Length: 60
Image (cartoon, rainbow, N blue to C red; front, top):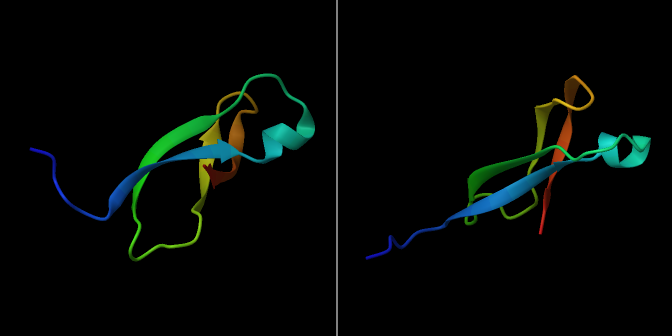
C-alpha cells in the first residue's frame, strides 16, 4: 500500500546552461514537502557540463 503524505518528487533544471547555449542539460531529482514549501524550489547544484555550481530551478 502506498504512503499518504505531502512529499512529492520534483525535477530541478539548470537555468544558466539554458541561457549560455552549452549543449546538454543538467537535471536533478529531489523531493519536497508540498505543504510547507508551496513555491518552486531554487537550489545551487553542480553542473557537470559547465563544471561549476549553478542555480537550478524546479520545473513542472
